[in-house]
Length: 139
Ligand code: 5GP
Ligand code: ZN
Image (cartoon, rainbow, N blue to C red):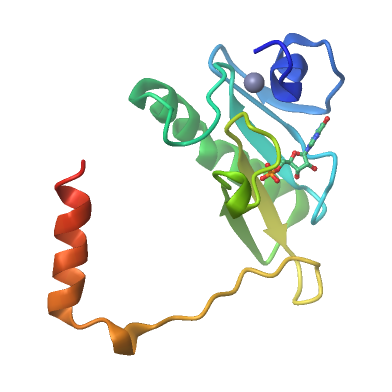
């Protein structure tokens, strides 16, 4: 896609610090480095988000995820790692070419907060079953 910065990075029109590349995917250092070692993994085919991505591209991309995660783990020895993917601006997506963030975690003050409230009291097993059926019937 001509005006996509990640497509331009793949094509070499924009510079990037490459971590890994094969015929289907490209991994590079996030310019924003939330934590040291923050990597983005992207498909070479332009897909705006997870909803659009075909199964073949998804399998090619996620196949590489353990290799990237283990490379970061080996290089930086983090205490943990979050894999994050944002879809849609409401969910904080700012670049509209699918990407998976690899965020090594070092300590509680490393600048990354992944937290949410759970509402298990509001959801009986019957309600969960209803929700599951709503999704599975849409697959
Ligand atoms: P999002 O907010 O869409 O989940 O993440 C987009 C990410 O792309 C951000 O973390 C941002 O720092 C990164 N980013 C945006 N522009 C560039 C760029 O030109 N080069 C690199 N390496 N990363 C970028
Ligand atoms: Zn793109």
